[in-house]
Length: 225
Length: 225
DNA sequence: CTTCTCAAAATTGAATACAATCGATTGTTT
DNA sequence: AAACAATCGATTGTATTCAATTTTGAGAAG
Image 1: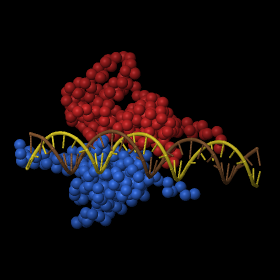
Image 2 (image 1 turned 45 degrees about the horizontal axis):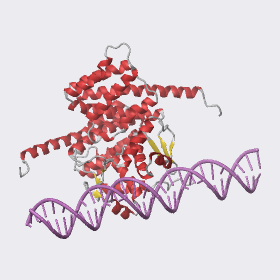
Image 3 (image 1 turned 180 degrees about the vertical axis):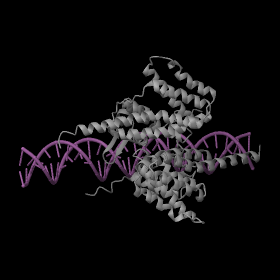
């Protein structure tokens, strides 16, 4: 009667590789040599390839034909695009979540942020954890079977963090609380709107950076002609 | 100097399988026996598996561990969810497209629908073709490198058509024209809003059907207790 | 006659072996 | 000495083979 232990190797390898990428043990731009990794993980190349293809779908790695597999390296332009995606997808999740959530779940969300209310000094690492839990929870409740498959959305916070993105907790805390109230009121449209506004802050931050970089590129043209 | 001829077998098999599914030669719910198909297409199971995994990511097929691969069969609930996804994703594409399109491109879009303006009787098959071209074009212009990978959106019109979804051309024609004007004016937010409203019609149509089915299910309980 | 069990066949999942292509290094020529 | 070409090595892409599991069918028992 044991129906567990059934997951295939590809899935396991997928999880391991994803963890390695998250931990930056595999760095962006680095080539993933199939033979080496398969030996390291103790499996053959077949399930490894399956895992790599799954990761490719999430845009965490990149296949270049006849060249190899590389850890995807995002430039600012792409990152902005990913944030635009996140805005609409997670906005949809918030909308659906608002329509389905019960009071127990909203209280659960509220509880995440109560430690930070009225604090003059906010512990950033603790807050970051609460932030991620919040977004994960909303996605979990608001995603049906289809949206759940779009794991790209799940990766975005990690990618963003890797690039050192920061929006001050003081700003986002208010966003979160307002959002929870809207969901508590079952106001789906407002929840979507607020989530999009909330997430747009990160995108705008990135856009500013892009402008800066472009400006700097004009000021300091590369040495040789 | 020929850099073509480089696409891998997996891609080719992917295209072939997708065509088969579109043509309903592989019917929803049907099992895809790997050995049989690989023989039929004259390739081994390795690139076939790669293709199947790509299709799985688009939710056109479904892997059931230790059972096999099946052509995905959508129920109304899932289809509605997919339409919700389409609303936000294609809405985003419209927004981005509005910001980038030039007059040549907007005229191109307008030209698609001029044959149908002021027609009392609309040729539905011809209109359907124009409709699909329109949405494809918007996606093409408005999708960056990331959104382009979300091929699910491309499949939706086909899936919907397979389920016999119909929104009268008289209604959608006006939507299309209004949308083109918004994009022509570079009004990104309005373009997004209009696209979402336009696409929501299909979703609402489906929701009605779902309610009907549920009502019928209550009226006629299945024979035996 | 129906149902349960056991066995065999078929199909998926994984590994290994083979072929083709790309890059690097070395040798030759200008 | 520098640049181009060719060969060698390494790595990916594909096929074939092997093992494990599931399903189906047949036979026996109730």
